[in-house]
Image (cartoon, rainbow over all chains, first blue to last red; front, side):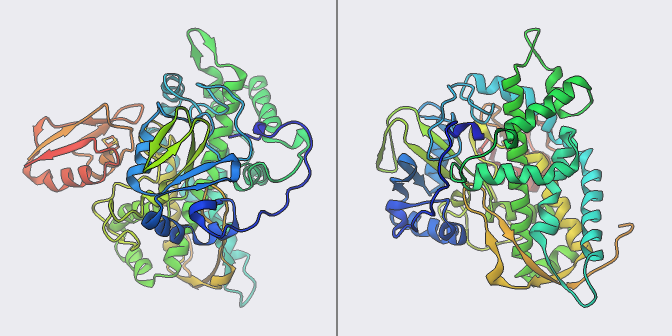
Length: 422
Length: 64
Ligand code: SF4
């Protein structure tokens, strides 16, 4: 999960890996070719090789059906969460805690670590953040529109809008300056997009060292924010260990940003190509809660991983201890066995048991926050920019790795409205 | 229509609470609380169906 998985010795900068020829036997989710066409790759694999294999990353499996993904997610006996990011390096942090509890923890420690955090992310705890988020989104749109030169009508929505929303919401929650957002994005790129592939990093420049500073600062000056909450927590009369706090904050930072940013961007990417859908959201705001879930289903940004804890069979394949298993929830969400018309975006889909936030005991802890951010970001966007289109389909670039979303998204603004009261 | 909720299966996705707040509340940790016992009021049957059809963990079951 964290950049501690990289060994301390300096390594040469990595070479670009060759593109896979057959995804069934040599898949690589960190490759640009996968990023550009992941849904097609999953559909192909689901049809002919539902549990694909690769020798990359020291050996890894890729189930693509809803049934297999769900089975792995619900089976904490044969699969451990000790590391949830497929990388060239196997994790060294021991079970059951892992580097970033609770996502890297197994039962029984998992439940304990998760319960500490659940109250901070319940629907009722998240609700008061909605107004702040709405204001933030409006401000971002103002800045974006004010920044347009005379006659200019195109913006990169990924960099001008989507990415700032979760960065600033989580900075607000953690109690760190919003201006640290650029640093967060560097950490996340290194950890999620090119795990173990970006070469040596100066110690002071790592997320670990950044967070040590932030935690020390909070210890020196206690405040009423999420880090303050963690520092105040006690287990049997003893405060949480520094490793536990650091791992948890690292997790919240990593898990909270890229993922939500991706969901917002993918939704705007979709709407840019579907005038009937953007019109419907403008004219029938009551469809929005369904549309949000449908966007999450169709463009689920997050794929998790497990390590095989005990030899087990999955979809006719024999998995061995310490093999990786990648769990593409977005592929489960497009399985025709589980969803009608899985490749269609049905804006008001009424049966939608999507797995965008995972399944089983590791259900995304931040799902209520993410859902709120996505809904508010889309509500404010269609309110202020009711009509828009892709400016250059070729220039859209999707992220590589386990979080999928547009990282470049040039959008032409066809109609805009001033801010002000709703 | 009768409704049942399996607390052991619930993972707190909160889709039920979002779609049918008349039928489900949510506790401080985000797990669902079923507000009716047994029979679903007729005017809420549509919402009960929505909640069941959107629970990723199949924790809500309905009987005609
Ligand atoms: S939708 Fe299902 S899993 Fe989610 S809170 Fe309701 S009952 Fe629990």
